[in-house]
Image (cartoon, rainbow, N blue to C red):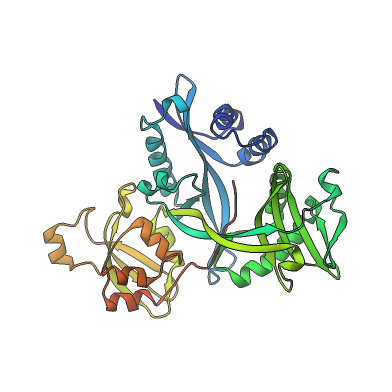
Length: 381
């Protein structure tokens, strides 16, 4: 069995048959969109033999804005999708080999972290993926009746709900949507995928492939909000809401409870470290457990300053008695998965305090960290 990375679009198209068998819920229209648009710039790791593909993992690139103090800098992050193995070849360890290779390859590329939307959480726990983002769920109280859904999404404002005019965006509105989103995201969030005009052009195509789109609400010609949606029969699935100076009821939406959506795992601790800063500088000894990426595993001195941080390795991958005697007991022992949950603000310091895993002194130091939170991550593929 050979593991290799597909880069050319012609080769990538050979994985489509496996996608269609693994994800039969995806319409042909959506799969057409995916292989035309997303496979232009992604990479696909496959496990194959005699040119037959048995397993695959897709890595879809996004540019992320991370922390407001690193200005005008975008960071390349991969979204893992399309994780699948031919049904008759499952439970043979093929996907384990493929995920291990993909994760270590991304680490070597210098990618700080990766993320995915799990079909089942338990699949990814052994690879130290943990939830870092919960999505707000909404119910659409009024079924959009856009003529433009049947008329190539021409962007005409044809509907009024509770006095608010709304329209379905076409790609000509992409730049305006990007400007609207950039202003709000920069003010409210610490980490999110960069929303430029090209992002919205592609997303509008993606939503159209799901029989949906972006519903824009205006006041005096200015965008006040939007929601992005797809359709499954007569059911509307709200994928994202972004608004200012307008209520959900005015948009015909009702907020429900939140649910865990995105799992992530740190790939390279010294690529994520520069984004982590503290109000008061400190250093602590941290033992990180990572069974997949050996460079992250071991005892480190974590030096955190006002402009960033750095992990300095103090020893090998396993704690030895002599090493502990020489370097001092770690202030915090944590898995790479739970370290990510802390850094991304999903779990607070009190979580480890309650479990008796850190001292009050360590707790106070960790509370000085400016976390990479809040997060805004609603991407589907």
